[in-house]
Image: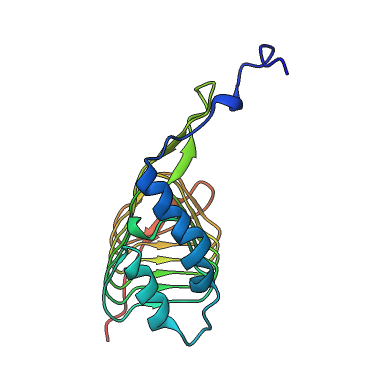
Length: 187
């Protein structure tokens, strides 16, 4: 096949992972992850145990719902009292850090990986994601590589977060932007 007529050549696109990482990924992907993914709703403690055994750091009183998909558990840091809902995708070639008292709602996508579309081989690139304390990432939010979400922020459902967001703001949209301050009622 003649590829010279194309400017992009995906036949040369490859990420060269070290052998120990390839083995670790294979063990997770083909042995451990299917067990993790199949756990029933009542098996939160088992899901947390499995993630920790594969290298994740997870604080106390966390809730990891069934069908959460984690690409690389060793690149996951979760604080205390964090809830991650059903069908959340954590595509973490780079570190994903979720700080204390934060909720990630169903079907949200935390994506640390992308491709350098300016390069003819479109190599894989990755940047970490950090979500602050006391945040709520609502349903079906996409968080792009390299994003930092400030403490106390709320991200509206189906938002697309491509840039850092400030602390204690309600943010929404595509692209996601700050809309108004988040103020809590006094108890």
